[in-house]
Image 1 (cartoon, rainbow, N blue to C red):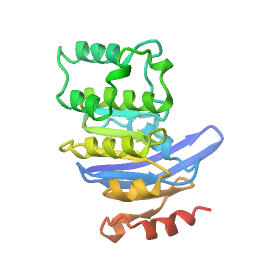
Image 2: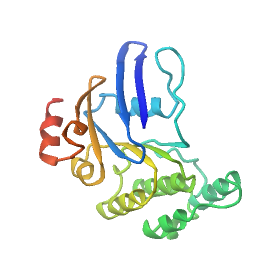
Image 3: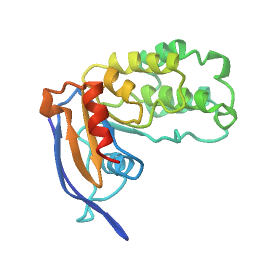
Image 4: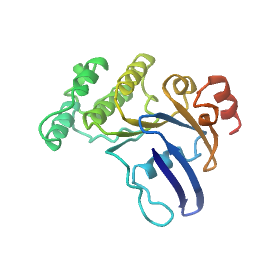
Length: 217
């Protein structure tokens, strides 16, 4: 179980005030809401990048990886070079899911291309493979499907669903993807949780989700 109580302000904006919630380990949780609702900020807080109101940082309960919407890779390095770097830092080997991800996402043809020369979709695939190569236990994903075509999105979901005892928290505007991938959905509005599927037995129903999402307008 992961429990939080979060208060956070930007210099001219109070965003979260005693935001309380808890997640079951191993769940896939989606964060929805219009732009500016606080989804990305919340992910950065959970990753320990932004401090809470008292100036302290959250210490993730397990090995954590934040995948930003921009991917966060090192320009000039290829996917192969990133993996070699990961292997060196990780003690000389990569988890088996790395090769599985390379094959499933069909990245062999651009393994040696600098990441800043890749298309947006190729870059997104490379960032996901690097994330999996680090084998985190808490994944924080900011719009992970935004640049992926439907085939790649489905395959990424297959890879992520295969991870055992890994908690995944992701933001998305794709309600169909939320319905098919998430175990639980929370909708954020003005720094508060407007709707939580946990109140419905964690049933992420698209019709209910669309109605709840519309309440943000």
